[in-house]
Image (spheres, rainbow, N blue to C red):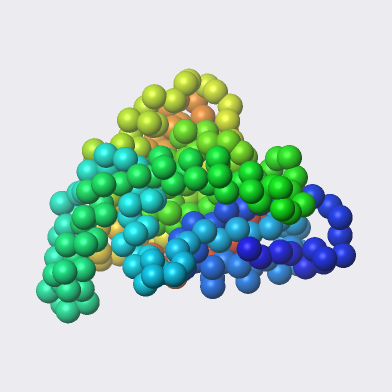
Length: 258
Protein backbone atom coordinates (compact mmCIF):
# COMPACT_ATOMS: atom_id res chain seq x y z
CA UNK A 1 0.00 0.00 0.00
CA UNK A 2 1.30 3.47 -0.89
CA UNK A 3 -0.14 6.59 0.73
CA UNK A 4 0.06 10.09 -0.79
CA UNK A 5 2.07 13.11 0.40
CA UNK A 6 0.53 14.60 3.53
CA UNK A 7 -1.58 11.54 4.31
CA UNK A 8 -0.47 11.36 7.97
CA UNK A 9 -1.51 14.98 8.55
CA UNK A 10 -4.95 14.68 6.98
CA UNK A 11 -8.29 13.22 8.00
CA UNK A 12 -9.76 13.21 4.50
CA UNK A 13 -11.08 9.85 3.23
CA UNK A 14 -9.48 8.89 -0.06
CA UNK A 15 -10.29 6.56 -2.96
CA UNK A 16 -8.23 3.43 -3.51
CA UNK A 17 -6.56 2.65 -6.82
CA UNK A 18 -5.84 -1.05 -7.18
CA UNK A 19 -2.87 -1.96 -9.39
CA UNK A 20 -2.57 -5.63 -10.31
CA UNK A 21 0.74 -7.34 -11.18
CA UNK A 22 2.15 -5.82 -8.01
CA UNK A 23 5.38 -7.82 -8.12
CA UNK A 24 6.31 -6.12 -11.38
CA UNK A 25 4.24 -2.95 -11.40
CA UNK A 26 4.81 -1.54 -7.92
CA UNK A 27 8.32 -0.25 -8.66
CA UNK A 28 7.10 1.69 -11.70
CA UNK A 29 3.69 2.88 -10.53
CA UNK A 30 3.92 3.51 -6.77
CA UNK A 31 6.54 6.31 -7.10
CA UNK A 32 4.06 8.25 -9.25
CA UNK A 33 2.01 8.93 -6.13
CA UNK A 34 4.15 12.06 -5.73
CA UNK A 35 2.48 13.58 -8.81
CA UNK A 36 -0.42 14.44 -6.52
CA UNK A 37 1.80 17.29 -5.34
CA UNK A 38 2.52 18.50 -8.89
CA UNK A 39 0.75 21.86 -9.38
CA UNK A 40 0.67 21.35 -13.16
CA UNK A 41 -1.14 18.00 -13.22
CA UNK A 42 -3.90 18.36 -10.61
CA UNK A 43 -4.08 14.65 -9.79
CA UNK A 44 -6.65 14.04 -7.05
CA UNK A 45 -5.29 12.32 -3.89
CA UNK A 46 -5.54 8.54 -3.78
CA UNK A 47 -4.09 5.52 -1.98
CA UNK A 48 -2.45 2.90 -4.19
CA UNK A 49 -3.02 -0.78 -3.45
CA UNK A 50 -0.52 -2.96 -5.33
CA UNK A 51 -1.80 -6.54 -5.52
CA UNK A 52 0.72 -9.33 -6.13
CA UNK A 53 2.12 -12.57 -4.75
CA UNK A 54 4.09 -13.16 -1.55
CA UNK A 55 6.13 -15.96 -0.01
CA UNK A 56 7.02 -18.90 -2.24
CA UNK A 57 4.53 -17.73 -4.89
CA UNK A 58 6.48 -14.51 -5.47
CA UNK A 59 9.09 -16.37 -7.54
CA UNK A 60 6.38 -17.65 -9.88
CA UNK A 61 4.39 -14.44 -10.27
CA UNK A 62 4.99 -14.24 -14.05
CA UNK A 63 3.03 -17.43 -14.69
CA UNK A 64 0.58 -17.29 -11.75
CA UNK A 65 -0.71 -13.98 -13.09
CA UNK A 66 -1.98 -15.88 -16.15
CA UNK A 67 -4.38 -17.81 -13.95
CA UNK A 68 -5.67 -14.77 -12.07
CA UNK A 69 -5.77 -12.06 -14.75
CA UNK A 70 -7.14 -13.92 -17.79
CA UNK A 71 -10.91 -14.41 -18.16
CA UNK A 72 -12.22 -17.94 -17.64
CA UNK A 73 -12.31 -20.00 -20.81
CA UNK A 74 -10.02 -17.60 -22.73
CA UNK A 75 -8.52 -19.51 -25.69
CA UNK A 76 -4.73 -19.60 -26.09
CA UNK A 77 -3.99 -18.10 -29.50
CA UNK A 78 -1.62 -19.57 -32.06
CA UNK A 79 0.34 -16.34 -31.88
CA UNK A 80 0.91 -16.77 -28.15
CA UNK A 81 2.08 -20.37 -28.60
CA UNK A 82 4.45 -19.33 -31.39
CA UNK A 83 5.87 -16.48 -29.27
CA UNK A 84 6.50 -18.81 -26.33
CA UNK A 85 8.09 -21.41 -28.59
CA UNK A 86 10.41 -18.74 -30.02
CA UNK A 87 11.41 -17.73 -26.47
CA UNK A 88 12.21 -21.36 -25.70
CA UNK A 89 14.22 -21.79 -28.88
CA UNK A 90 16.25 -18.66 -28.13
CA UNK A 91 17.08 -19.89 -24.63
CA UNK A 92 15.01 -17.22 -22.89
CA UNK A 93 12.62 -19.87 -21.53
CA UNK A 94 12.96 -23.56 -20.71
CA UNK A 95 10.52 -26.19 -21.96
CA UNK A 96 9.54 -26.86 -18.34
CA UNK A 97 8.66 -23.21 -17.79
CA UNK A 98 6.80 -23.04 -21.11
CA UNK A 99 4.69 -26.03 -20.07
CA UNK A 100 3.94 -24.46 -16.67
CA UNK A 101 3.06 -21.14 -18.37
CA UNK A 102 0.59 -22.81 -20.72
CA UNK A 103 -0.84 -24.88 -17.85
CA UNK A 104 -1.89 -21.69 -16.06
CA UNK A 105 -3.51 -20.41 -19.28
CA UNK A 106 -5.49 -23.63 -19.53
CA UNK A 107 -7.34 -22.93 -16.26
CA UNK A 108 -7.87 -19.17 -16.01
CA UNK A 109 -9.87 -17.63 -13.18
CA UNK A 110 -10.15 -13.88 -13.53
CA UNK A 111 -13.69 -14.15 -12.17
CA UNK A 112 -12.38 -15.59 -8.90
CA UNK A 113 -9.62 -12.98 -8.62
CA UNK A 114 -12.08 -10.17 -9.31
CA UNK A 115 -14.35 -11.53 -6.58
CA UNK A 116 -11.39 -11.52 -4.18
CA UNK A 117 -10.71 -7.84 -4.90
CA UNK A 118 -14.31 -6.68 -4.63
CA UNK A 119 -15.76 -8.97 -1.95
CA UNK A 120 -12.77 -9.65 0.32
CA UNK A 121 -9.91 -7.20 -0.06
CA UNK A 122 -11.88 -3.98 -0.50
CA UNK A 123 -14.08 -4.46 2.61
CA UNK A 124 -10.99 -5.23 4.71
CA UNK A 125 -9.11 -2.14 3.50
CA UNK A 126 -12.20 0.03 3.94
CA UNK A 127 -12.39 -1.04 7.59
CA UNK A 128 -8.71 -0.25 8.24
CA UNK A 129 -8.04 2.91 6.22
CA UNK A 130 -9.65 6.29 5.64
CA UNK A 131 -11.45 5.21 2.49
CA UNK A 132 -13.98 7.29 0.57
CA UNK A 133 -17.38 5.97 -0.44
CA UNK A 134 -16.63 6.18 -4.16
CA UNK A 135 -14.10 7.11 -6.81
CA UNK A 136 -12.09 3.90 -6.61
CA UNK A 137 -10.04 2.69 -9.56
CA UNK A 138 -8.52 -0.44 -11.05
CA UNK A 139 -5.45 -0.42 -13.28
CA UNK A 140 -3.69 -3.22 -15.11
CA UNK A 141 -1.22 -3.62 -17.94
CA UNK A 142 -0.80 -6.35 -20.58
CA UNK A 143 -2.67 -9.34 -19.11
CA UNK A 144 -3.45 -6.95 -16.26
CA UNK A 145 -4.96 -4.64 -18.88
CA UNK A 146 -7.03 -7.56 -20.15
CA UNK A 147 -8.22 -8.07 -16.57
CA UNK A 148 -9.12 -4.38 -16.20
CA UNK A 149 -11.05 -4.51 -19.49
CA UNK A 150 -12.83 -7.67 -18.34
CA UNK A 151 -13.73 -6.03 -15.01
CA UNK A 152 -15.01 -2.91 -16.79
CA UNK A 153 -17.23 -4.96 -19.08
CA UNK A 154 -18.65 -6.61 -15.97
CA UNK A 155 -19.06 -3.16 -14.34
CA UNK A 156 -17.42 -4.48 -11.21
CA UNK A 157 -18.27 -2.60 -8.02
CA UNK A 158 -16.77 -0.57 -6.31
CA UNK A 159 -14.66 0.67 -9.20
CA UNK A 160 -15.58 3.96 -10.86
CA UNK A 161 -12.63 4.02 -13.27
CA UNK A 162 -10.62 1.38 -15.08
CA UNK A 163 -7.21 1.73 -16.72
CA UNK A 164 -6.41 -0.93 -19.33
CA UNK A 165 -2.86 -0.58 -20.61
CA UNK A 166 -2.08 -2.64 -23.74
CA UNK A 167 -4.80 -5.16 -22.82
CA UNK A 168 -3.78 -8.67 -23.82
CA UNK A 169 -6.59 -9.49 -26.23
CA UNK A 170 -4.35 -11.79 -28.25
CA UNK A 171 -6.85 -13.92 -30.16
CA UNK A 172 -9.85 -13.30 -32.45
CA UNK A 173 -12.00 -15.60 -30.30
CA UNK A 174 -11.25 -13.89 -26.99
CA UNK A 175 -14.06 -13.95 -24.44
CA UNK A 176 -13.81 -10.17 -24.38
CA UNK A 177 -15.59 -9.92 -27.73
CA UNK A 178 -18.65 -11.76 -26.41
CA UNK A 179 -18.75 -9.57 -23.29
CA UNK A 180 -18.42 -6.38 -25.34
CA UNK A 181 -21.15 -7.49 -27.73
CA UNK A 182 -23.52 -8.22 -24.85
CA UNK A 183 -23.36 -4.71 -23.38
CA UNK A 184 -26.68 -2.84 -23.20
CA UNK A 185 -26.93 -0.20 -25.90
CA UNK A 186 -26.50 3.46 -24.96
CA UNK A 187 -25.99 2.65 -21.28
CA UNK A 188 -23.84 4.88 -19.07
CA UNK A 189 -21.28 3.18 -16.88
CA UNK A 190 -17.88 3.57 -15.24
CA UNK A 191 -14.97 5.22 -17.04
CA UNK A 192 -12.47 3.19 -19.10
CA UNK A 193 -9.09 4.48 -20.28
CA UNK A 194 -7.22 2.35 -22.82
CA UNK A 195 -3.62 2.86 -23.94
CA UNK A 196 -1.65 1.19 -26.68
CA UNK A 197 1.99 1.72 -27.62
CA UNK A 198 3.32 2.89 -30.95
CA UNK A 199 5.80 0.00 -31.12
CA UNK A 200 2.96 -2.49 -30.62
CA UNK A 201 0.90 -1.03 -33.45
CA UNK A 202 3.76 -0.56 -35.91
CA UNK A 203 6.63 -2.71 -34.65
CA UNK A 204 8.10 -5.98 -35.85
CA UNK A 205 6.60 -8.38 -33.29
CA UNK A 206 3.52 -10.11 -34.76
CA UNK A 207 1.91 -10.91 -31.41
CA UNK A 208 1.78 -7.23 -30.40
CA UNK A 209 0.42 -6.12 -33.77
CA UNK A 210 -2.25 -8.81 -33.52
CA UNK A 211 -3.09 -7.75 -29.96
CA UNK A 212 -3.43 -4.12 -31.04
CA UNK A 213 -5.80 -5.05 -33.87
CA UNK A 214 -8.00 -7.02 -31.48
CA UNK A 215 -8.06 -4.22 -28.90
CA UNK A 216 -9.17 -1.78 -31.60
CA UNK A 217 -11.84 -4.25 -32.71
CA UNK A 218 -13.15 -4.47 -29.14
CA UNK A 219 -13.31 -0.68 -28.94
CA UNK A 220 -15.27 -0.64 -32.19
CA UNK A 221 -17.76 -3.02 -30.60
CA UNK A 222 -18.01 -0.79 -27.54
CA UNK A 223 -18.56 2.27 -29.73
CA UNK A 224 -21.19 0.37 -31.67
CA UNK A 225 -23.10 -0.19 -28.45
CA UNK A 226 -23.22 3.58 -27.89
CA UNK A 227 -20.73 3.67 -25.02
CA UNK A 228 -18.13 5.99 -26.55
CA UNK A 229 -18.68 8.61 -23.86
CA UNK A 230 -17.40 6.17 -21.23
CA UNK A 231 -14.14 5.42 -23.05
CA UNK A 232 -10.93 7.39 -23.59
CA UNK A 233 -7.85 6.09 -25.39
CA UNK A 234 -4.27 7.16 -26.04
CA UNK A 235 -1.36 5.89 -28.14
CA UNK A 236 1.94 6.23 -26.29
CA UNK A 237 5.38 6.46 -27.87
CA UNK A 238 6.60 3.40 -25.96
CA UNK A 239 7.27 -0.31 -26.33
CA UNK A 240 5.31 -3.02 -24.57
CA UNK A 241 7.85 -3.15 -21.74
CA UNK A 242 8.45 0.58 -21.31
CA UNK A 243 4.77 1.46 -21.59
CA UNK A 244 3.66 0.42 -18.10
CA UNK A 245 4.60 3.58 -16.22
CA UNK A 246 3.49 5.87 -19.04
CA UNK A 247 0.17 4.04 -19.24
CA UNK A 248 -0.49 4.41 -15.52
CA UNK A 249 0.34 8.12 -15.61
CA UNK A 250 -1.97 8.57 -18.60
CA UNK A 251 -4.75 6.84 -16.67
CA UNK A 252 -4.20 9.09 -13.63
CA UNK A 253 -4.22 12.28 -15.71
CA UNK A 254 -7.34 11.22 -17.61
CA UNK A 255 -9.46 9.59 -14.91
CA UNK A 256 -8.27 10.98 -11.58
CA UNK A 257 -7.79 14.69 -12.14
CA UNK A 258 -9.35 17.28 -9.85
